[in-house]
Length: 95
Image 1 (cartoon, rainbow, N blue to C red):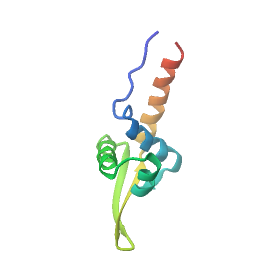
Image 2: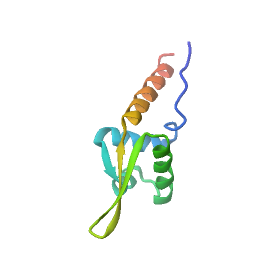
Image 3: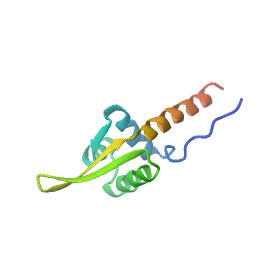
Image 4: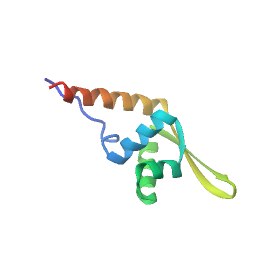
């Protein structure tokens, strides 16, 4: 049996949680992601940047009611990476 490599970007618990949330909602603001992952703002910010650098999400910074707002949206590359990650995990379950 050959095990498929797991994507190191998605193999982080917090990055996987962010991508999983974005798979279902497609777009979310920083506060929504922070509340639903129970992450600290600093850690979430670092992990969002890693996902952005990998091309898995787009990040848009804007202002809403005079407050800064960060919007994250999953990219087609991110959807594909998530699908591949799930398929790779399934090879481990078929042992």
